[in-house]
Image (tube, rainbow, N blue to C red; front, side):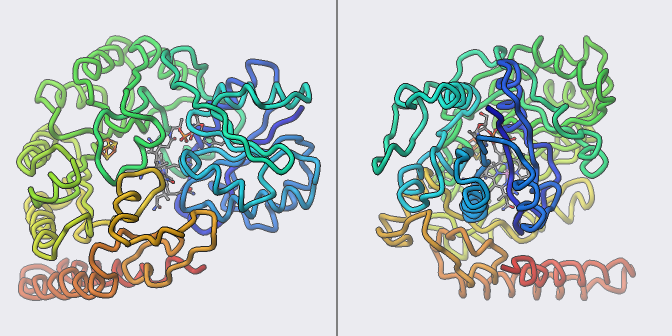
Length: 471
Ligand code: B12
Ligand code: SF4
C-alpha cells in the first residue's frame, strides 16, 4: 500500500515555510519498514486548492494522512472530502495536535474521515498501515479512533514512547531540504518531547504530556553531525518546548555539540526560572542566536493564575544574561488571560515598552501581546465552558467563524478566551498600542528621523491585522 502524508493549502499556511518534522518522523518509521511513503507539504508550497486537487488526482496512494492543527481543521476536513471525491476507496487518516481530544466529535461530523491517530504518530501509523494492508480490523491499534460501519470506536491510549533514541532521524530526503533552507535558513530539529509545566493555555502539553522524554546527547550529536555532513546545515531551530527544562541535560547536549566541533547557529526556547549563567555561556558557544522566553504577563497575580511558575524578575534577569552574551531573546506575552483586567494588561504593556526602550534591537518583544485563544484539551477550554465563554453545545468540527476576532488580529476560526469582550479589548489596544506609541514617538521626533518609522510601524502593524485573514 502506498501512503501520502500531507499538509493542507489554506490561508494560515501563508506564514509557514517549514519542514514538517512530525510527518518526517512518521515517514522515517514507515520507510524503515518497507512502506512506500511520500510527503506533500502544500502549506509550505503555498499551493492553491486547485493545485492540491491536481496532485491528489495524480497520486497513486491508497492511504492519505493529513496533519491537522486547530487553525487548519476546516482545511483538513475539506482535504478529506476532496480525497474521497477523487478516490472513494482511499483511506483518510487525520493526526496532529488538534486531534488529541476532538477525535469522536470529528468522526461523528465528518464522514469523509476514516480514522484518527491521537497523540504521538510514529508507531500508531505504522501499525495502522500494516493492518489496512492486510485488510484487518484496527481494533488492536492503540491510539486510534476509527469508523467501523456505523460505529465509531475509540481504542485505548498508546503510551508515550520511552526511548526517543529508538526513532530514526526524520526522512528529510523526501522533500527538498534545500528549498526550505533557502526560505527559512534554519532546519527544525527536536531533542526532547514534552514539558513538565502546566500553563493553562498551552496546547503543547496536551499532546506530549507532562513527562519529558530526552534524547541522549549522543543521539542529538549524531543527528546534527549527519545534518552538517549530508546537507551542509549551519543553522538549526530546536523545537523543544523548553530546552532547559532539565538544565543538567541541556549542559550535556551543549558539551556534545562542542566536543564534536559542530559549527552551527541555533534557536532555542527556554524557561527563565531555569536559566543559569553557566548554561547561557554554553548556549553562546554552540551558536545560539535567538532564545524564546515565555513571560505571558507582567502581572504577578495573572502569572499565578495561569500557573506560569516564573516571575517577572526571572524574565528580566534572563533577558539581561542573554544580552550580555550576545544572544537575542524573543519574549512572548499574552493578553485576556483568565481573570485578567486592563490594569494587569497595562503592567505587561509597561514591561514590554521598558524592555524595548532599554534594549532596542537586542530584544524582540511585541508591544501588543498575543490574545489568548482556546485550544482543545487545554485547561483554558474547560474554564471557558465553566465560565460560559464557550457554549456547552460548542463542537470543534462544526463551522465556526467569528469575524470579530479580526479586530484583535486573531484567526476567526479559533475561539478567543473572551475574558474581556473583544470590542472592549480592541478599543483598549488601539488606545494603548497605536495612540500611546505614536504620542510617545511624536514627543521625541526631533531627536531622530528614525522616529518616523516608530510611528508608522505600530500603525501598520495594527492595521495589517485587518487584512490578514481574508477568509
Ligand atoms: C515549529 C512549529 C511551528 C512552525 C512549523 C509548523 C510545521 N509545518 O511543522 C510554524 C512557525 C510555521 C508554526 C506555525 C503555526 N503553529 Co505551530 N508549532 C510548532 C511547534 C513549536 C513544533 C511543531 C513540531 O514540529 N513538533 C514536532 C513534531 C514531531 O510533532 P508534531 O508535528 O506534532 O507531529 C507529531 C504528532 O502531532 C502526530 N502527527 C502530526 N501530524 C500527523 C499526521 C498524521 C496523518 C498522523 C497519523 C499523525 C500526525 O505525529 C507526529 C509524530 O509523533 C509546535 C509545538 C510542539 N511542541 O509541537 C507548535 C504548534 C504545533 N503550533 C501551533 C499553532 C497554533 C500554530 C499556528 C496556527 C500559529 C499561528 N497562530 O499562526 C501556525 C499554523 C501553521 C500551519 N500552516 O498549520 C500549536 C497547535 C495547537 C493546536 N491545538 O492546534 C502548537 C502545538 C503550539 C501551541 N501554541 O500550542 N508552528
Ligand atoms: S512552559 Fe511552555 S511548553 Fe511548558 S506548559 Fe508552559 S507554555 Fe507549555
